[in-house]
Amino acid sequence: MKKHQLLALVLALLVLTGCGGPTMKPANYVPPTPGQTPATATPDPVLELTPTPEPIPTFTPESTPSPTLDPTPTPSPSVVPSSTPINNPPYTAPPPPAPPRTDVAARARLGFIGDILPHKSVYEAARISGGYDFTPHFASIAPLMVDDYLVANLEVPVSGGAPDTYPCFNSPPQLLDAMRDVLGVNLTTRANNHSLDQGLSGLKATDAQMQQRGMEFLGSYGSQELAGRLHIATVNGIKIGFLAATDVMNIGAPGSAPWCVDKYNAEAMRNRAAQLKAAGAEYIIALIHWGNEYVQPTNTQKNQAAWLFANTEINAIVGHHPHIVQPIAQMQVQGPNGPKVGTVVYSLGNFLAGQSTQGQRVKSGLYVRLTIERYNDGTVGMGAVEYLPTYIDVDNNYNQPYRVVSIPKALADHAAGADHRMNATKALNMRTLWDEYKVLMQGGPAVLLEG
Image (cartoon, rainbow, N blue to C red; front, side):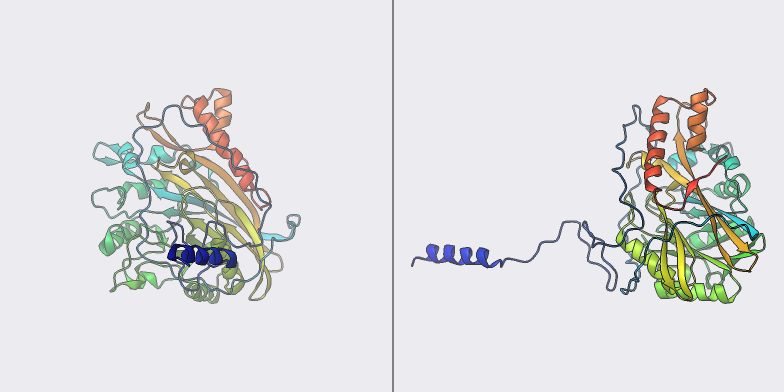
């Protein structure tokens, strides 16, 4: 038998027996962290919390894109997040909600807003003689955010140095003034992939800027003393504990200060939640920077949430980082003290940013209001879960190009001819986003915030 005939025979046998070369990974494959559930293009089946939504509507492109917005891809993280335990617990959708309880002794309305990430176009629009003023950015939305305690994701250092934009941000300190005085922010989470954009010295300077203004923060710190604090807020007599963590970082913590950013670590979060509980917290909320940008939640996120609810004292999770709105859901697990229902806001989206490369979704976010209730028997639980879709309206025809608006109100004002900045293209974009969010919220606990 000749060599070429022998080779053909061998190849034919390989095909018939199913043998072959090594499986090729896709070009964008990233090996999972040991012990972490890998996120793949086709994830393993996991019990879903809600029915599979209808296809997301396709956007009609803007007829005249705003020319001054800044691109904002986030750099590939240089620090691999801590692993999630592999013993992911089973979880199910909770039973249908019971009627609102009538034995409520106290209520605490907690508000949450997403990424505050001012690019150059955003802070240049705030420039005035002698400084910056972000009041116009927030003036339209602020009256509609009615709560007892407001939490924001501050995704930039505010060191007092020269402002800077992507990839290493730094915002003018006047941003903090508007967050405190216009929005009424009570607490900021600073655990995110931009925490160390200005280094450890930038963290220390940001601490000082916020402390001078009496603003509370957690998630990143310029000193180990601050990193060791527990944060419990008493809101209408109910003690709410908060912890923060980021699952992704662009710049790693220096070896001399591993404590400077609260990185995602399940065991560390379990310990912190236990400390909060021992210190008197009646309800505990984790503020987590997680997930993949511009896409809907992965099974990894769902398993992370289920593990935290089943194995820690955490009652609710509020998420950031994807820069788009993701669903609000509830899941039932077997918790440390019996059956437990956890509430998870996967991503609040962008509240104020100058992104433009990912279409309309990065121009939008949610204001979410969670009502925590204490009942006459002394127990504490989740009451109403409400959301208000917001939109970053950018119009260079005005002296103040940026403003954050309520989508429902902006559409109503447009229909009534009461908002001179609205036009048919903006209305179409906002309406399409709102239709998308209605699909995302199907089967979950959230209802539209009225008023």
